[in-house]
Image (cartoon, rainbow, N blue to C red; front, side, top):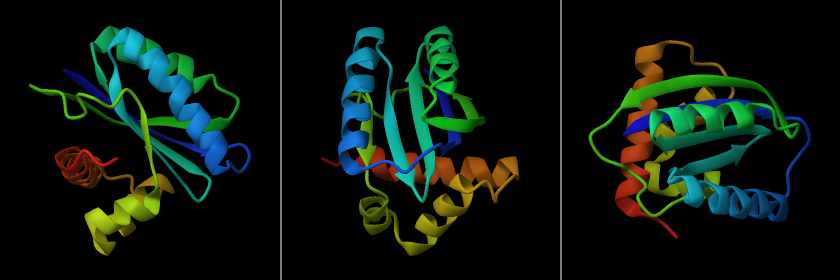
Length: 142
């Protein structure tokens, strides 16, 4: 199971309705190609975690990177995993506030720094992403 995470900057502020539409449309597409994951938007930045077949995920990322709603797309994490973390989430948008509630303030601050591009150390990036994805997937929040 190939996993990829990227961050990017929004080209314009996004409302909750726009994020919901984005998530729903992406979810429909991703279900058809068997890609799962989560999407987070906070302070004008996106974080998305995708998982599935490597060729499919990489092709999807190339498509996503061309979307005019964001810029500065940067892959920050790739990993080959034994199992899927988000088996039922074809692209679920999660609010940052909800994440902070389940992750705790410290991990929330780390994730916020990561999304802002302030963390460039790969070991630290991997630690944050692994912590976030394991906690969120174990909750399978609604």
